[in-house]
Amino acid sequence: MRMKYVVVLCDGMADEPLEELGGMTPLEKAHTPNLDRMAQISEIGMVQTVPDGMAPGSDTANLSVIGYDPKEYYTGRSPLEALSIGVDMAPTDVSFRCNLVTLSEEEERYEDKRILDHSSSEISTEDAAVLMETLMQEMRRGGYEFYTGTSYRHLLIHKFGSVVELTAPHDILTKRIGEYLPQDAVLREMMETSYRILSNHPLNLERKAKGLNPANSVWFWGAGTRPMLTSFEEKYHKKGAMISAVDLLKGIAVGAGLDNIIVEGANGGLHTNYTGKAEAAVDALAAQDYDFVYVHIEAPDEMGHQGSIPDKIKAIENIDQKIIGPIVGELEDLCMDFRMLVLPDHPTPICVRTHTGNPVPYLLYDSRKKAEGMPEYSERLGNKSPLFEKEGHRLLSRLFEMDNER
Image (cartoon, rainbow, N blue to C red):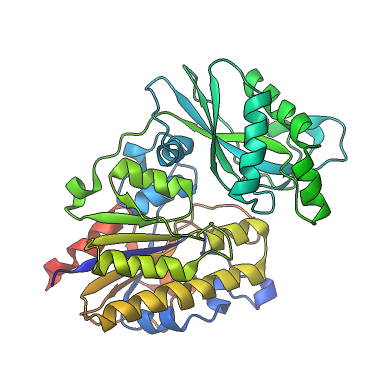
């Protein structure tokens, strides 16, 4: 029976020691018996997923983890998401991520407002589609086209556009937006117009009555041109699949030729369908005969952006108990030989509520081989390991090449 491979990507899980947790990180504080059991017989180390000089985004970091050097393959975040939506970008197109965000309402001038929530209370795709349809109808402009994505994550394509420098909304939470608005006059005007349209939209008034944040403005960022990724199967000689609720990851999969496995109820939030993702991973490896599965869980990152310590801990515990434990247990019950790589793509520390480019801990488990590991899986013990991979895109080859050590 040939070896199977699993990556469990815990988005934004890594953090910094917190005074509120007695100097522990959320990962250290979380009850993770499955990870800790595996850590004792696994390879534990640190990896630099974000190359020096590049922004610490989930785009660059996940490209790195999935084995593509961002310095070679990265052309912007939004184009990767465009692939997942099915947008056939022309070489002259520029794609922009279009977030539905919550801005403060008391200020009169748009530039004086503050971003209160980059996800509008993790707005449902159904609610977002209603608002996006309104914008498509009322903000039609030649050469620009909106596309509806998932939850708060949407898309704007500019025909014959230019890539311009823009700021991610989750990087400036609670800050006055004036100094972060686009220099591009058209993009800025569209953002201001969107606020006038959305702030009094009946759906947003209904959301506010329910205690939810209104999705009262668009925010453009992540500009880029059409990506060109080498086929994953040609590169690594493995038939692979992606399991994620996030358009970015689905887009990377499309670009790399991985199959996207859609799990009902998977939404990228704290209450995603963890069990469904675990079952889909086992089924892909056992019944559908994939060699490789990449299971992406967004929840720790979202909770880091929200600055919620209890919810970030809960997200990590959910991954341990509902993703990692079941996948390992099921594959062992099926007597399958497998390796599992567990890691965050980047830290999303509670103290800053955004991404950083610091190295992250990884755990590399082999069902057939007991390594000399660590008492637990954590940032602290990962930093004590002598193992450090400076070029993050090489770590996946480490997962595949362990056979050569036998």
